[in-house]
Structure formats: structure tokens, C-alpha cells
Image (tube, rainbow, N blue to C red; front, side):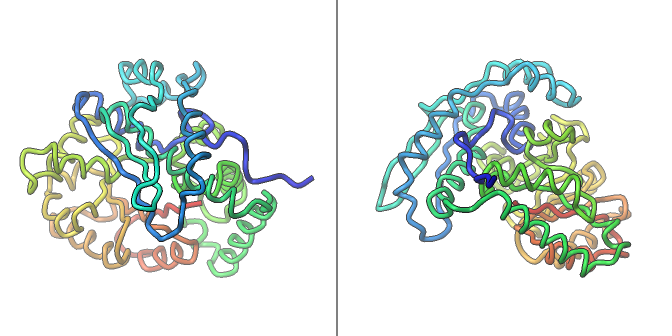
Length: 345
């Protein structure tokens, strides 16, 4: 019997989000509980999303029904750096739709969030997943789950044919695809198949709900949001990245040590990433620009600071395909860095 890739409920529960939203939310609770923020959704291409507004609004309303169960809170309690006060707050948390504004403006769909950072921070990922899945429901009604599964195995076949067994034993891949997923059921299937059949090393997913389902550690540290916010929160704009990194260090005391480099430019980031931060953080994440040139800059920076790059990790997360991930892996393999790739679903 064929099985649709679409389910009635798009966002399964409060854990159906990226882990870094929770880690940033805890840091906001402890450092910026009263800060007001505003988000605005912008579609990156010219596609008309207006026909989907009613269904998007309906799915947003369903977010307000969600709360954490005792079992879900129990899963989070096993993560040592999530503190009791934050977990108590999450146990009480509900999506408040009064912070959400939707409609048609200048001939385009608009979505705005305005309210306390602490109370709107969790909206972003489920909202983007809702927009993506609602759009795909209308455009690809006939697609079945077996087709998604077969497509993934074709990619595995390509990788097995083009990479040696030694390369496959070292190639690490993670799923960071929640916000742009085709649908929840597709992401669930992809992560399950990756865990059991990926020919390389599948190290996990950023999706907290799926991590719980698969008994894996959720992945993620910080997003652009954290560093961008400090452009307003920091003492001076020129010191904003230093302020963001310093606050993160004070919150996590050396844990969650992968820093994002491209909010301004990589060169600007490395100018702020001095010996103190470079020794304290475990590595860096690439999310835009040429990944090989970026890696070369990172390696040179560590050398300049007298740090062995082999003691650090580079994470690549800029819309990677398996061919691109293999290309990056080969460029760095046998060199002076540990690298892992994170691919959207």
C-alpha cells in the first residue's frame, strides 16, 4: 500500500525543531529575558505563496496546542547543560499567537514575529517547516514515501560507487534539514535510513524530536540569530561578535563549542577570534561562500595562533549534496583538520 509523504499535523510537538533553538533560548533566558525582537519572513525567490495563506494560518494555530510531555522533558533532562530553571520554563512554554502577524502585503505573503525574544525564539523553525510543507502539498500531491526512500538509496549507490571504503569509514554526515524539509514524514524517513543504511558515518540530526525517537544525541550549538542579535545588544557594533562569543562562553563554559563565522564576513570573524576563543571553542562552522577557501583561512588562522588544527573541527552546512560533501572531504582529508558535513533533507 502506498503511503503519502504528507501527514495532517506538520509540526509534531515542541521538540520538532532544531536543537540550537533550545540552546540559544536557554542563553536568552539567562542573559536577555526582557529583550524585544522582530522577525520577518522573506521568500528568496519570486514564487507566489499567497494561495497557501489560509492553510499556513491553520497550521500556525495548531502550534498553540503543543506542550511538552513528561517523557519529552525527561529526554531533555538527560542533557547535562540544560539547566533546571530552563527546563521548568520549557515545561510551561506555549506558542503565543499574539506575537504572529500574517497577511498579504505588496502582493506577497508576509509573516512577522514581534515580541519578547524568549517567547518568540521557538517560532522560526516550525514556521519555516510549515511554509515548506504546505507549499509542497499543493505542488506535489501524488508523491509517495517510497519515492523519497528510493531517491535516497540512489544517492547512497552513487556514494558507494564513487568513494573508497576507507573514505566512507571517515566521512561524517549529519541532518540539519528541519526548516527546509520537504515534509515531516520525508525527514523522518531520511533520518531513519541514514542511521541504519548510510554507507559512511551518520552522526545524528539537529531535530530534537527525531533524535529522541532514534535514541541519538541532538546536534547543534548556535545560529546566525545569536551573533546578529548582538549587533544590537553588544556595547559597540565593532565588538558585537566578541560580545556574542563571550556571552556564549559564560553560558556554556566550554561546551557547545562550534562557532559560526559568516554573519559579517569570515575575515571579520577571524579578526575577533583571538587566542582565547580559538583555544576555548572546539571548531568553526561554514555556512556560505567557498568552503575550501574558508577552510584554508581557518587552518591558517589556527597555525598563526600556534594551535594544532588537528585538535579542532570544521563543520560544513551550506546546502550540501553528497557529491559536494565528498569533494570537500577529499580536499581536507589527510590534511590538518577534522571535518564533518551537515546536509539538508
